[in-house]
Amino acid sequence: MNRWGPSSIFLKMMVQAALFEKIKTKKILVVGDVVLDHYIWGDATRISPEAPVPVVGVDRDTFVAGAAANVAMNLRSLGSQVELCGLMGNDADGQRLAGLMTQFGVSYDPRFLVNAVPTIVKTRVLVRGQQLCRLDRECKPATYSIEEQGHLQAVVEKVQQADAVIISDYAKGAVTNGLLAEIKAVAQKKGILIAVDPKPKRPLDYEGVDILKPNKPESIEMAGIVWDGHAAYPARGVCHAIYEKFRCKNLVVTLGGDGMLLSHQGNVLKTIPAYGREVFDVSGAGDTSMAALTLALACGESLEQAAHFANTASGVVVGKVGTALATPEEVLNYHPKS
Image 1 (spheres, rainbow, N blue to C red):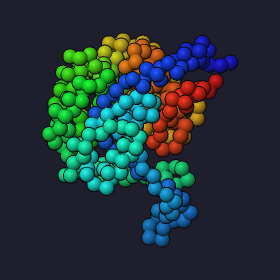
Image 2: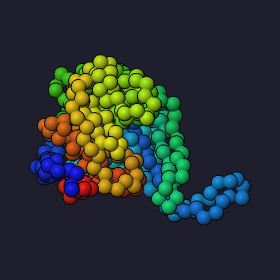
Image 3: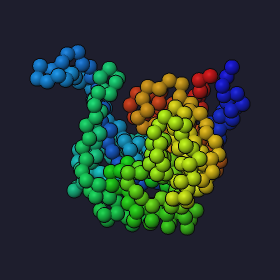
């Protein structure tokens, strides 16, 4: 029996070409931490004589946009117009990342390419497709603060031209309360959708945003609930606590293989299942779901319809290795496992 039943018909209706035609007309502004993801691919067939560690013979290096830059790339891959605001260095890594975005059609104001700011780079070493370790290069958060580096007004100007704003916080320093306040003031005045992918270890004021999208552990931390992970996920308690704290209109909690929990003004609406057929890598899947969810909402879809669309796009991405993107063709042709 097909476990999707009538919802498969609903899903097909959601991913029809008409939605992608609407997406083409939308301009989304992404504000947040910009990262260059570096992948080292190779094989390990022996142990080093110097220490009990594998020796990796490097086959190739690949570079893709990460964090907020990956959100922007996902938006562009799905067909929307995109502009990205986030600081990176005017160094070799920054030039490489800027080139990737330009090549893909993501707008990036060169004012955010700063000489005194080293580009954040995450290097992942993969052996036979499996991640062996990760190396991070970054400075203290103040280095990447849009507010502290004097670029707040440039962001405000861009908010006014957008159909929706995604704030992508990876806890690297770009997002601050001052930045949030300025974005909310403009967006709420003009009726522009604000979606936030939060990092609760940096307590920020998300009050009044249209949508918050934490994952399961982040939602527990944001709610301030004690949960050992063995009992049933406390959905009602989480949704109520987060609403009481932030008064956000909608809350979407990504539950990994258990799908998405949807909440409106603190009330649980429903949980929809995950659509992954076969999971190879979850890197960047949260960015994909954030992009797709925001696009569908910006096009006038309901929260539930937007979540179905986001689940489909994420299902495409987790079937690929490394930080990946979903295209309209892949989403349209995607059929969840029965």
